[in-house]
Image 1 (spheres, rainbow, N blue to C red):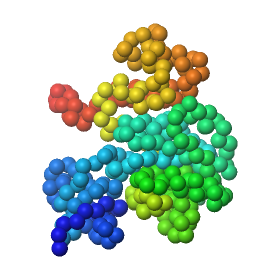
Image 2 (image 1 turned 60 degrees about the horizontal axis):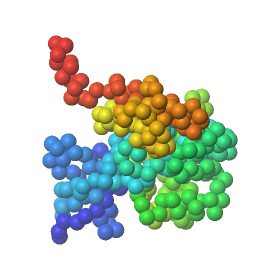
Image 3 (image 1 turned 60 degrees about the vertical axis):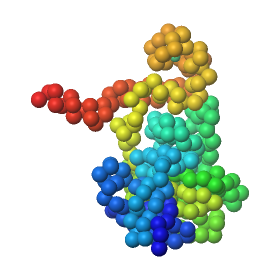
Image 4 (image 1 turned 90 degrees about the horizontal axis):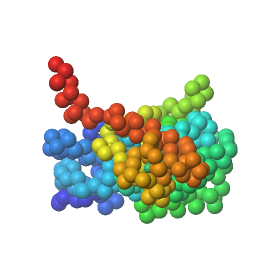
Length: 304
Ligand SMILES: Nc1nc2c(ncn2[C@@H]2O[C@H](COP(=O)(O)OP(=O)(O)OP(=O)(O)O)[C@@H](O)[C@H]2O)c(=O)[nH]1
Ligand SMILES: [Mg+2]
Ligand SMILES: [Zn+2]
């Protein structure tokens, strides 16, 4: 037996499920990854030894921490129109993370039976991402078939709050192919109007002619793991700003307080959504407060 290459589809408690040429292998990782502070992630292309050890992680196209997935082409950012209510700041953070890592964001507004999508669609009207309005419970075959096409030929991951319907969408796509994945779905808490974190780990499913990662919903999304040392990169993660940055008087304009700022003028004239601009400013502030782990310990050292 020789080494083989495969893709990690699941990783729980140090045990990795790797698909190699159609075979599913249960593997462990070599200790050296831990020494190198490298953790194999779902989506990683890996080399597996005959003893079923992961001996190598092939170069990654990208890797995210929340959700913990690697080599993603598209991030499907799911929000519910109600139960839970959409949180645009959270959605905007996800779009920024996707942009930053070179992943194409697609917005899904689910539970259209529970709310009117007009408001949220107007926020994203000028944002050049695909937007899909969906009701997983009533979608007809044509709608599901269009949706399935969005996943074909690429690796995708879901992201979004708990309870918005990520696993329900996955099951809908599976049923469309005549399969039962039984990705676990959970009712939202009627008291808190939030999901209950039904999905516990990331798992990659081979579906719709591609790979799709179901992921757990996560609440907070800090920039603490972000490598955005230079927060001036932030405006570049808002694609609808780009046409207006040219109108800024200062080449290093932060688009917040400067005079003659093309971005602020576009917000004032309604060409940039005020809500997106507000998210930009909030993120800019948060990034300013962020100190990388190493710097933090250094400054603690100084205090002693
Ligand atoms: N009314 C309505 N309910 C939906 C729709 N889609 C999903 N749900 C319900 O929403 C609840 C949560 O759905 P899940 O698919 O478990 O949500 P999730 O995003 O996977 O949640 P986590 O795994 O906790 O992150 C379930 O009770 C679903 O039946 C929809 O289009 N309309
Ligand atoms: Mg789920
Ligand atoms: Zn500016």
